[in-house]
Length: 345
View (cartoon, rainbow, N blue to C red):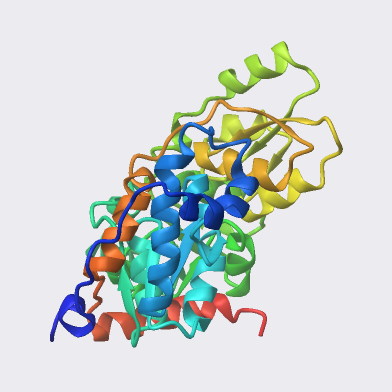
């Protein structure tokens, strides 16, 4: 099979000067992000933003950006934004020929699984995930032998090979719904041990777990959050279910990235919020919820931060790095993801 560069061709590099024309073309975009992107940084970002948005038209491409992308990506070049579930759905529906995944590798694989006829690119192939790395397809096969007949649910933060071995995937948005959909007394929920514990605390189904975790969320502690509340008793603490139980216990609300965003948007003027998740999400939500003040004890995801505007530009110019999934694996993985997507349809 010919490479994406051979199929589409390589385009010449555009000028990346911050000209008056570029400044004018990108001014409305900077207006959206000016209170989270310093003015001194915009002359660097703007030429990339302008060039990428023009290249998307040339390549018939869309950019999918996870909530953990930086604001200049999330608000200025992305066509679709959201959590893993939202992006999975959008990947399946887009009419574009090319999908550029603003996120980590398993997300790009999921896009390819749901849209195998499309060209899927990830700007940095080393953008991995500690959760996806914590379990393999062989581990799933061993679990099948050890727990025959017990349904297995995999978080979308897993490789296509793992998804191909399970009964259904889930996200933090719908994990409880997915687990309960089997009508079984026991369900294996993997690989995130903390998400599984959170699900177990909110359902009567017995949950069997796997010892995986997110290197971003597991670094938070309940003591850290209690200290923030002691310093500011009126602060609202919102946590992701991938956090340890003591963090969830110290929070006012726990939910998926999409539910966290909805919760923040509904808060009244002057609210102060600790958003217990990846750093860039607070910046992105701040654009949409200017009435809220963010206290930011966040942790950076080193994998998400591999995706930058220069790398997105290179991906579109050189049609790299293409994400491929074995068709047989892809068909089985697609079935597991589509069972989740169409659970209520």
